[in-house]
Amino acid sequence: MKLIECVPNISEGRDTAKIKAITDVVETVEGVRLLDVDPGKSTNRTVITFVGPPEAVCQAAFLLIKKASELIDMRLHKGEHPRMGATDVCPLVPVSGISLEECAEYARKLGARIGAELGIPVYLYEKAAQRPERKNLAHCRKGEYEGLDKISQAEWTPDFGPSEFNEAVKRTGVTAVGARDFLVAYNVNLNTTSTRRANAIAFDIREAGRNATDSATGKNLMDANGQPVRIPGTLKSVKGIGWYIEEYGIAQLSLNLTDINVTPVHVAFEEAVSKAAERGVRVTGSEIVGLIPMRVLTDAADYYLKKQQRSLGISDEEKIKIAIRSLGLSDIVPFRPEEKVIEYLIADRSTKRLTGMTLTAFANETASESPAPGGGSIAAYCGALGISLGTMVANLSSHKRGWDDRWEEYSRAAEEGMGLQRQLLRLVDEDTAAFNRIMDAFGLPKGTDEEKAARKAAIQSATKYAMEIPLRVAQLSLESMAVLRQMTETGNPNSITDAGVGALCARTAVLGAVMNVKINAGGLDDKAYVEATLAECARLTAAAEAAEGEIRALVEKVIG
Image (cartoon, rainbow, N blue to C red; front, top):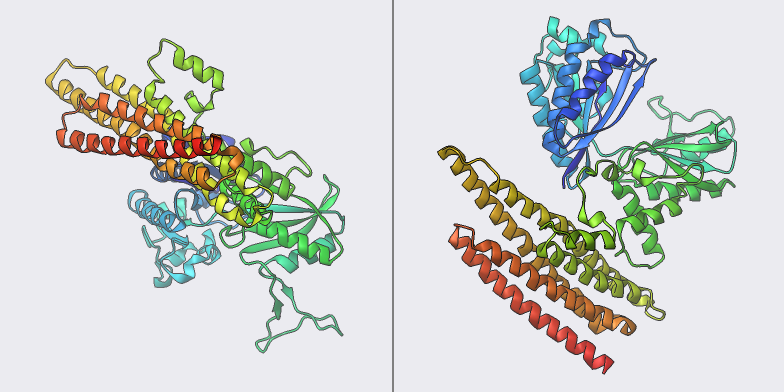
C-alpha cells in the first residue's frame, strides 16, 4: 500500500479554536489519519502531521490550506519562527510503497491546484522544486511575509498562483509546497554530563563539521575569500549538536537525519559509538523523537542480523525487537512501537481481522454459522502455514553449526518465504472481504431498470474479484513449493519432515483455492475470462500435485 505523510506548518499557535477548526478538516477525508498536532505559543505556529494514501492526503492538505487561508490573517501575524503564509510550508514525505520522485509529482499537482483554485501563490521546494535555487526552503522564504512584494519580480515569480501582492495575497501570504524524505530527530545518550564533549562528538559526525583552527593561536583559519575553513564531519545529511538534558542527568548528541536513505539511524548510531569511544565516552543508548516509518527499524535489524551472519527472513515484529535492543531505544524510557511506528498508528482496527485472532478464536469463527471465513480464507491460511514451515527450515539451516558459510543462501530463501507468507496472510482477510462484497452486491436495490442494471454490474464485478483472490492464493502457494523443495533437498535434514508437511499444506492451498475460483466462475458473464482462468487453474493444479508428489517422495526416501 502506498502511504505518504504530510507535515503542514500553519501560522497559528495560540488560538486553539482556530487550530482545531483547521485540523478537523483533515479527518473528513476517508483513509487519512491525523497523527499529531503540535502548537507553539512563542513561534505562533502549529506543526500538523497526517498520513494516508497519496490522493487522499493531497485532498486533506488542500482542504487544510483552504481552511487556514480563511481563518488566519497574515497581516496580523507575529511570531518568532520564520514564516510567509497562513500555511507556511506543506511537505509530502514518502512512508512506504512510494518513491520520493512520486511524492514530488504529487506536490506539484497539489501546488498547481492551490494556485488555481485558492489564488494562493506557491513556491515548490526541495525535491519538487522546478528551479535549482528554490530547493532550499530558506531561499524561498527570504524576506519572510514582510518582503512578499518580491513576487512581482521575475526572479521571484511563484511557480503557481498570482504574482501580484494584492489584498487577497496580503491576507493569505505564500505557501511552500514540497517533497522531502523522512526527517528523523534522533538523540544518542552518552555516559557523560559534559556538553563540550558531546558537542565535539556531534561536530565529528555532522556533515557541516567544525571550523578549522590554528593550533598555535586557536583562531579560525580563513580561506582566500576570507571565509572560515571547515573540517567536514563523517556523515552526510546529518545535522547535530551536543546538549545536557537535566531531566535525564546526561549529555546527548541531538542529531537530525535529513535523508535516511543517505544516513540511516543505525549508521548514525554506529558512528556515534565510534567517535564517542575516540574521546573516552561511551554510548549507552538512543532515543527517537516523534514518529518513524517501520523501515527505520527493520533496516536497522537487517544491518545487525547481517553483522551476526543471521537470517533476515523473520517477521517485522521480531526485527523491531532486535532494532530496539541493538540501538538501546529503551535505555531511558520504554520504546513502544505501537506509539512510534507510523504503520502501526494508521492500522485500521475498526475491522476485525482474521489474522489478528488467536488460533482458537479463528477456529471458532470458522466453525460458527457465519458463512465467512470459508474455504477460500482457509486455503490462504494453509498456504501461509506451508511456506512458514519452509521459512522455519531455512532459518534453522542458516544457524546450523558447521554451515556458517551458507547462511546467506538460507537467509535469501527465508526472506523469499516471509514475502510469500505476508501476501498469503493478507489474502486470508481479503478472501472473506471478497465474499462480503458479493453479498453486498446482491443486497442492492432492484426496483427500477437503472437499479437492476447497477446491481447486475456490481454483482459481476464482485464475482470477478472473488475469482481473482483465490487465483492469487493458488499462484502464491505454488510459488512457495520452490522454497519447500529447496529446503527438502538442501535444508537441515533434521527438519525435512517440516518441509514435507509444508508441501502438503501448499498443495491443499492450491487445490482449495482452485475450488473457490471454479464455484464463482459459474456466475460470471465474461466467458473469455472464465475460460482463461479455468485453464490457469488446471495448470496450477497439475503443477502443485506434481511438486507435492516429488517433495513427498524425497521426504519418504530420507525417513525410510
